Image 1 (cartoon, rainbow, N blue to C red):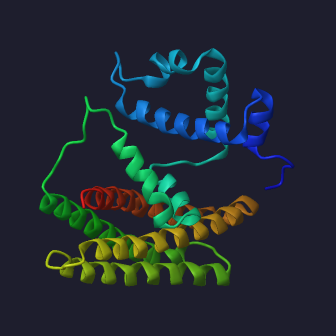
Image 2: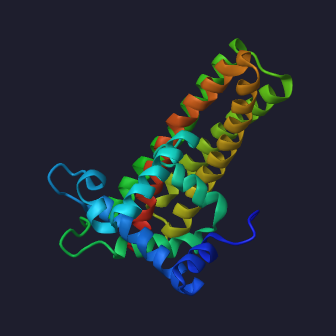
Amino acid sequence: MTKDRSFIDQVATNTEQEPAVVSRVIEEFCLALRRELDEYKGINGDYVGEQLHWDIGNRAFFHLLGFLDQFSEKYQWEPGSAREYVSRLFTEDEWKPFSQEYFSAKTPDDPPSAAPASGLLEEFSSAAYACAMSLMSNANYVQKELPTVELPTDIRASVESLCADWIGTKHDVIHELDELQESSNVEDRIRRIMSWLGEDMVKLQEQVRRLETLATAEDRYRLAYLLVGESGGNILRSFVAAGESADRVLEGR
């Protein structure tokens, strides 16, 4: 932290409240905001445009929209980006209670649809298989196109290594899925699969950052950045689907 005072301390001073109280209010606000966005029906289903300003007041609404504007300028956010940040910053034991809290906080009027445990497991197996195959197909594509783009030797080698990791993970995941249905420790196997996939997502993100830095400095590297970035986006979408399926299985156990 580079600032003298934390964000919570600043708000506590401005509102003349104890930091612990401010921290709890922020936590509850973020949970409620996420839940309302998820559950809101309204006229057109537009929670931000139709209801949010009534829920939080004009001042908060104005500054929240300003935050969203600045956020959209500074971040290339896609579905699944949250899972990447969570995977890098927290262990599963740390973030799992927050996930459980969110799902348990859903209103009784709109409970999540239930599905048999076997159906959820099949859903996860299908999503994880799709993610593994996405790793394989995108690795093959990058390997095929890599000789056609310009890159420094060391970065080219790191991209080749990343593709090899993707292919290796694909084989590991498929093997683990073959054992999953008859396993007595389903939860451990699911966590192991998601851990392998998550490690590849972290490597992907690091590689894309390096390529983005190169492309920003020299335009001749932009094609390489687009090649890996777009292939990575394909993988990320399938990873998000697998992660959501994994959460549903583990929540039901």
